[in-house]
Image (cartoon, rainbow, N blue to C red; front, side, top):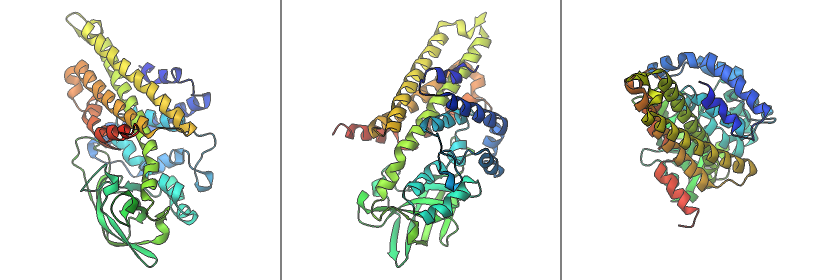
Length: 390
């Protein structure tokens, strides 16, 4: 049943023929290169290294990046990125984008705040699929409280010496670079800076976090820095302005997560509708039972509200008037919606929904990470309340 996904274009008047052509091109790539391998990659617990080269050849990594670095940005807007999030979510493999597209949160700070020399060194090989980069902010002592991170960077001549650790780092085991939040000054947000640390530097080590509830194929790691020397030229922006560098990423990351969650909710709806049409109980289709019809109606109602909210926030982001509070609450709304839809779809599918190898089981297993990653629901509500001066 294609209705749940293709109807999105009908409800968004801002999507053009170019956007639709991008969706069709991307869908062909996903259906050929990813869909047939979803269960295999999930069970084996990692993505094959050759996937980066295949994805780079398709041009996916370069979406929205300047042509001088090997990207393609002419005519690209937020809706192209939203479509990418939607089409990857069709796979139900949540750990795929968190690893394959880890540059989506690790590279923008480099582009926005790095020197020309640093960008020339780092960006082209990443867009070519030859290297990878991860964002390293979260620490064992705290997650969403960025202003209180403890990893230190002490200036010594033309280098910083970094000590500390990061954890829950997506793409961390395979990364060649870490965009890393460090403390160069006193307490609070004013003491934070951001360094790009080469993974091969002396004193960098890492261990995998491979016993996760979901995102089995996701490369997730803890990173350790033991007297790691990093050139001063690898500083992003100015020393002490790191909170701005990190916060510059927040809206884009949360919007991407919201779109993925809404699209995953549509996967659950699609699977539930298909099953309800075909499955018979007590002499009639599941779809003919009022309780099932009501479940499906409420799933669609919540998905519709997410789509409308996403369109509102997307328009504001494009116009440069986005509210961090609105986007924070969008993320909460979408995480609650996908959790509801995954549960209801599981109820409709019954026993078959509990078996591995179907999209609803995988999404149901992975819903909690959406309510935590990119800022927990509780932190998101607190951020939104500050918008109103509370």
